[in-house]
Image 1 (spheres, rainbow, N blue to C red):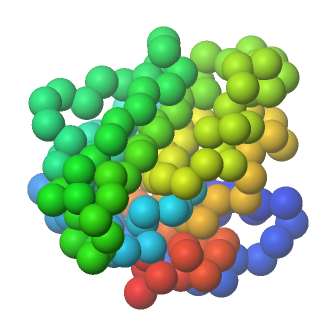
Image 2: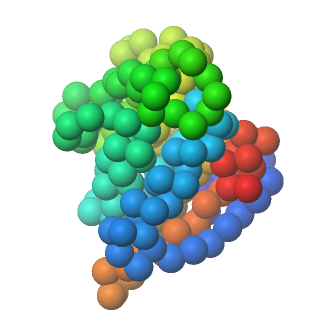
Length: 172
């Protein structure tokens, strides 16, 4: 997988790493959850089926304090969560709105517009997007893109690409 190019713009920061196992995925998610910039970020997740996109989201949401099982939005397209202030290390006292999208089943990029997602993407909160390419050019530019490539030994090669100051802050 290559680093996704967003609207022809150059990335601010590109970092590469390897997640040897699920514990490494969890550890990265926990570190990311502590970043105040996460409150308003748009994060795209790129990778083949079974690469670990939803697993990463589950660890991130658990790190933010979302209780219970986080289900994949593959069929529902979007799942929303409200994270209480106690789950955040950001100094903010308000809840954090989180939306987890999965556009895998989109057959026409116009479905994004028809579903009314423009309002959600314009609102405050964290947006996590699996299969963003299926939404065509409708998505705003992400702050951070995470590309996950499966390796033969079951580890994951990770490319983290920041496209905004928020994304750069998440990778700092």
